[in-house]
Image (cartoon, rainbow, N blue to C red; front, side, top):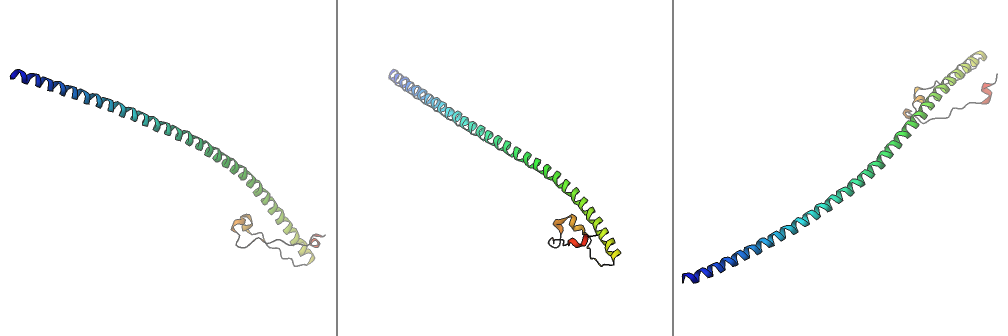
Length: 144
C-alpha cells in the first residue's frame, strides 16, 4: 500500500507543480501585459506633455512678441509726448510773451484788458477741475 500511495502522491505533486508552473506562467504573462500597458500609457503621457510644451512655447513666443510690440509703442509714444511737452512749453512761453505785449499795449492805450494767467493745470490737462474752454480773441485786438 505504501508503494501505491507514493505514485499517487508523486502524481499529485506533479499536478501541483504543473498547476504552479501554469499559475507562474499566467502571472508572468499578466505582468508583461501590465508592463506593456504601463509603458504605452507612459508614452502617451509623454507625448501629451511634449504637445503641451510645444503649445506653451508657441504661446510664449506670441506673448513675447506682443510685449515687445507694446514696449516699442510705449517708447514711440513717450518720445512723441516729450516732443509735445516741449512744443507746449514753447507755446506757453510764446503766449506769456504775447500776453505781456498785450498788457503793455493795453496800458499804453489806456484800455482795460482781462488776460487770464495760464493755469498750472494747463500743463497737466488731465487734472483740470473744469472742461477745457476755447480762448476767444478778435482780430482787432492785435492791430498796431
